[in-house]
Image (cartoon, rainbow, N blue to C red; front, side):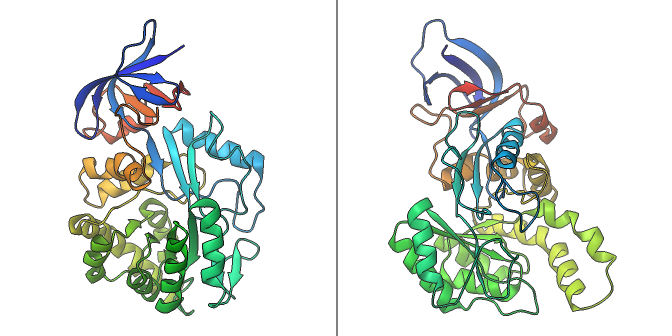
Amino acid sequence: MVLRIRGHALPHGQYVDLYADGDEWTTDPVADAELVAEGWLLPGLVDAHTHPGADKPGDRLDHEVLRRDLQLHVDAGVTVIRSPGLADDPPDWFGRDLDVPRAWHAGPWIAQHGQFFDDWGRRASHEEMPAIAAAQAARTGWAKVIADWSPDQSAVPTDVLAAVVYAVHNVGGRVAVHSQVGAGGAAAVAAGVDSLEHGMCLDPDLLDKMAEQGTALTPTLSVLSQALATARNKPAGPRKKWLVDGVEAHPGLVAAAVEAGVTVLAGTDSQPHGRIIDEVRALADAGLRPHDALAAASWAAREYLGLPGLVPGAPADAVVYAEDPRTDLSQLAHPLAVVLRGRRVR
């Protein structure tokens, strides 16, 4: 049975009437197509920073947990994920089965010796990093580097990250970099990475360069904000000051990034999975227009990953709401329908 949706398609709000021709939208009418929903249409939600398949750092990738986590994403209207770091290479069905989101991933993380979680990623010397990252990106399209891990440890130098970027771009891939310390963020921007994950403590003066060179920011605002109350109750010291000051400044940084023209991506980085609405709300609370907060979790993120929106020939993903979700973000929790790969999954 061919399904059909119609309504006001975001971001522009034009009225469209779409039919799922397999896994592609078409405007060509199909006799006896089932109208599954009518209202306000998003081209599927995107969680651009999520690590499904392991309940806690250091756990092995569990395929049952992975499918459970992905189903939570789908239930929330997420039809696309990007996993900048997984506990291991995923099974063949990851990103492909009809009931799981489309997926981009960077395989296991790449970190300096003595940093990052034990048994969760690859620790490498500076000399090894470019080749390891390029080999990973050649397999999956992405590589993920931990540029810094704590304020009292050294960050990966700019020249090393630049060599990683060169090697990865040479095989047609992209580089995501974790940073929560100013030095790591500065090195990542100077190296021309494709996306900066978290970006806490980043110098706002670097935002114009990020916009100019196309470095996206995935701020993971909601999960960092959740950690703030706990951090404030910790004993005074340099680590507490770094975390509290960084998290308190983070919403302002994100708002300034949007103002500078940086592509901002919504990513949850949290357990349980399927909490993209929390990140959209956090972006709006930071001062983004609801339109821009939704863009970070939908059409702008899809465009960044190379996916068109609700147009003929685009992948047949959509989430349908009764009202314009930009007027009330709580609508995100109550979709009329979720369509993934031309099939209604909710």
